[in-house]
Image (cartoon, one colour):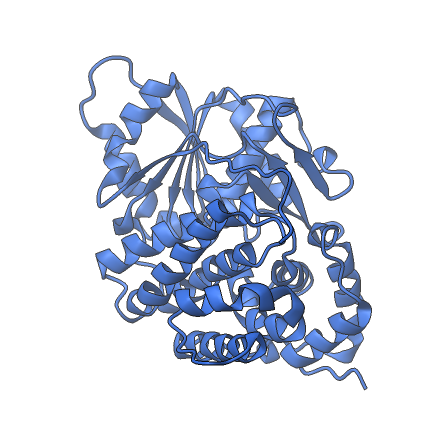
Length: 403
């Protein structure tokens, strides 16, 4: 058995969970020494009343020094576009903010993390920080970022509220870029299920598929350890049980709470075992080129990639099967993997998720762009994928033919 000589498990965010957990945010900011808070969110969450529910917690009487919200940046767009980050940087400096409150899903929280990094580094254009598309700063090179930062998750998918990674979309070159810094994650993550009950079934489904993908890619990673396996295994169990319940009944507080926990555990395992992530590699590429929502891209690609690269999944197929409640008897690893893939395909389909990208009108003329995007994505560094395999996967999830 090959033993990794070195591993790292890093979880620096404090996590407060439960209905109305948002009510303690002002006290937490006071404890962090914040004075002037910039709220970062999007127009959809403002219209849905989610932003208001969090802001109302600042209207309650609090003893002692009171941190205040001095501005709201609600211009976050899909996939945390770099120009959006740059606008947030400009606005944060205009209102002299010294703390950040992010309310949203992955795009909002990634925008806030990139904003924090940009403020700390004195950057005006976030693209300047990622000239090669991927910036890695581990400890001890990375030093604490003294900007109080709280994230309120409104989806159970990316787990971005506790991850040290910000994925930023460079709209000029149509590439998703990554900043990895161990101090990038929130000081505090608020997991309040009441803020997720308004999430539509389809978004609940594909954000949940993102969380499932994190857990599966973590458990099969060559860099996995018993610690990351524990988080990934439990995340799969939680998602298998609760995602269908949350999709069927969006007001099911227990299912919503468990999905937030499953998402958090999945990304924690994913980031600490980060190595081979071919599903995310493809999902980043399809998202960058065709603007397909990240969770939806993962949902379509997960079973196809698992079938296409069996050698990556075979060693841990039995663990995924156990976590996902797949009944196995005397099957060999290939037989177990086949059952796992079929269970995942049916599971995602029953949630109302599509089996392919036919709605996006992908054609033969798009092949070169997809091929380039997959190969240039930062995820390809650790686990490069051949052009033949890329074309095979693309042909299975779209209407194009490789023949």
